[in-house]
Image 1 (cartoon, one colour):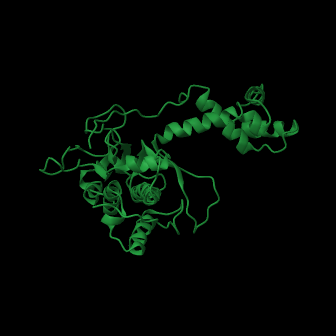
Image 2: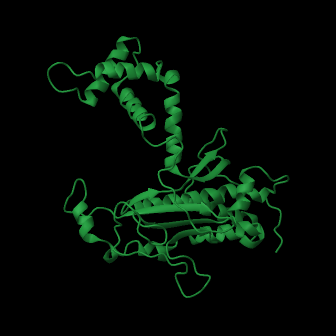
Length: 329
């Protein structure tokens, strides 16, 4: 069916719109246009909207809560920090990706196993046994047993965001809404899981919006929609923060290290000063040198960054976890 020309209205859509808000924006445009979904949306938008409306795969999500599959003895042994009579939260990994066919998928599996259920080195998994089935039911076209979200045709919408279309049609502005809807759905998933599980995000969504002024009733536009390793992004941000010490704080990293070494020297009698006390002394010494804005929080943060990125911590730009996945659409 050929899509008619219609200029969508994105009133009440902005960068804070959640999953349900985005669905409502689409339906409001359907109602205002006098068209149905098949007439208003482009073919790839129909696929994307249908999958987005289906939301989370509740069947796959439900298997996460099969408590009889947990290693309850280990969870109670580990316990909660503030309540030893409560079991620890089971640890899980979340991985999402844009497939080679231009689709979006999100899967989970326990910490301590690979994505097929094989044991890894390190901590034991919090499941006594866990397996990933390529097809959760008898049908060859059924989805994997651990797949929480699957959405078709996001690549077409990403082309709109990147501004690569020569003559974009008005209806393609809804791509911003659909992609924000996916981000909202992922946010909803994380909120549900983090209450009951210790979640490790191997990949996450990162959105950048246009810098123009916006309002709660404006028409925000998305500039970037990316899937990336959050630990890598954090490391890159920390390295950039460390590189800007002179610009931000007024003194060099070398000056800080020399001052720290002087304040950390052990006196002839008594124990060596604790790092916390050293940090306070360094902050005081810097203020006496004219850096009046420096607090012990600043020196604590700088000490952490130097130890992590200069003294054998994670190497710059290196991800905390590297995992290979088979391609499946």
